[in-house]
Image 1 (cartoon, rainbow, N blue to C red):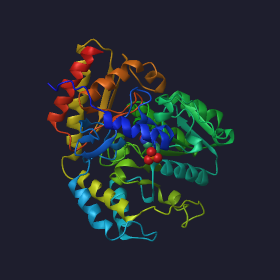
Image 2: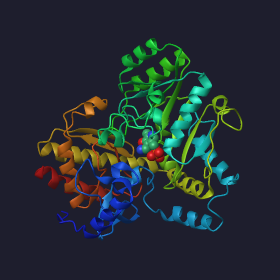
Image 3: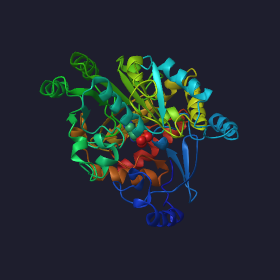
Length: 433
Ligand code: PMP
């Protein structure tokens, strides 16, 4: 059994203390600051395979994976080698390069609903561009999103958003004009009746529906197939578009993304995380006739100095190539299933109310009996207990997302041995909670 270490965190504390004077809250993205689990963040030094190493020399089995991109394992030698080769040829051209075609073809081949794709630099950019495109195509202004779904931090989406917004308890954000969110409608995830009502009340006015096809930003919440099928029908009937935000699920749930897994064809798809293999990449794509509206093919403006830069393209190409090899998704499913079942068994054996699950390399559980089918259910979970669980696991060398409102991620580098060590640590922590 892994010994409980009294984590030595001297250096992490020093670095974070300085960061607090330099960066808002000491970080460049809110959830990293450990605000919702208490304690202070550990400062990373380097990452490798399924592991991360902090500046005090502690080693952790990592289930955050840089929030998704590290799906082939951190610092995969083939990805690093490809990047090294590219770096000497230049990191940004601001001009077309063939690598953009290579990555585009890989995406288009794997995701049949995507006929044309535009690369951007983050998931946020992908989603805000997709929203503009839904509006441009339909000449309607309203958009429907779901409570607890996060689509990046564009003004229109900061309404009942999950992730860090939920973690920090911000119902909204100051600085977002009421006029930017006036056209954002919300409904409850997995509640098709609710969606129908919104459409009845806004007939012919909704440009599109955007959703996480599997929620990862309120914790892990899978959709029902009927819900996804219903959304496809309702949008088609009303002339609205359906946009799958696959920033998290893209190339993680399945080779052809969540839309392949569930057999639903959205009009538009947004991507990020995995597609950049650890470099800043996002993408949006879909039906050719819709994408032809994007400048310079059409009038909808959207641009980017670093978009499609060769370094980022190389990391994405190599990562998708590795994921395309036989057995990749079987491995993700097997290790993740072993992990979540082990965790649920261990927790329940120790008397805790738990519910959770996984799809491929994405998983999560809640400290509640459940079932959890939407954000409102997720809020019933014991978050104070989650904080103690998180700390206990950290002290035993397991790095989990520092918020109850985030999904967990595995990678091709996680082995059965890593999983079993994690479950062993979990048994100790569950016994203490
Ligand atoms: N959409 C979803 C579903 C996400 O999970 C995220 C990020 N967690 C985003 C959009 C925003 O992506 P980024 O952080 O790259 O801007």
